[in-house]
Amino acid sequence: MSSAKHVDGGRFHNLKKILSAWVRLNRRYCISVRPDTPWSYNERALLSIFAAAAWNAGGVALEEYSTQKGHGRSEWRGRCDIYCNIKTSDIVGESKMVWLWLGRAPEKNIDKIQETLDEACEDAEDLNRHDGKRFGICFAPVYIAEGRSNEIDERLLALQEKILSEKFDALAWCFPPKVRQLPNPNKWRDCTYCYPGLFVILRKVKAA
Image 1 (spheres, helix red, strand yellow):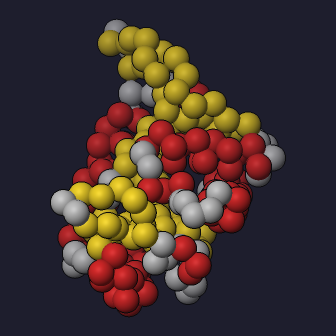
Image 2 (cartoon, one colour):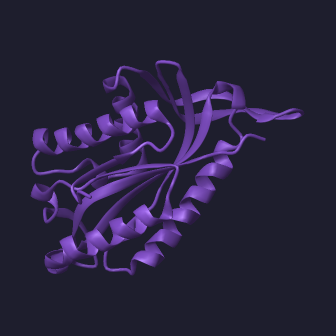
């Protein structure tokens, strides 16, 4: 297992291609825009890289587009966070973002991921099942106080091992060693944080 990067598309071969491209593009951003990381921002920024990954993998993507939601008599016009097509696979998803504090016990962070996936999947259930495989998507960047940056590698490995043991439908992570201890100027209570990287974790919505 590499703590720097990991891709597991599960049984979704074309999704694996998108996740592999997602890792590459996150790393590319860090190299091109120094000193900065894309995961120290918001959900919308993270969604843009996921969409770019679909294009980079040979597919196409749309973000935040209008669509018909709901089923049967209960239907309405709404927005879908992401649509991707790669070869014969259509994927639609609703995304949520959750911050994982690296100083917290891994089990507590798993609980936060599961809660966030529950919310994302609840929204994804409203997407038109004919538009593609529906996924809840959880973007999970991690952070820790700059003064505890010497703990990053050990705590990160423990969290990664715990996430792998959960056997999610698909997941990837990106933690480039060169930016793990890069302080970010976003201060809270006079404390500067490091943002070592992030996970993206997906759960397929069961067909209704």
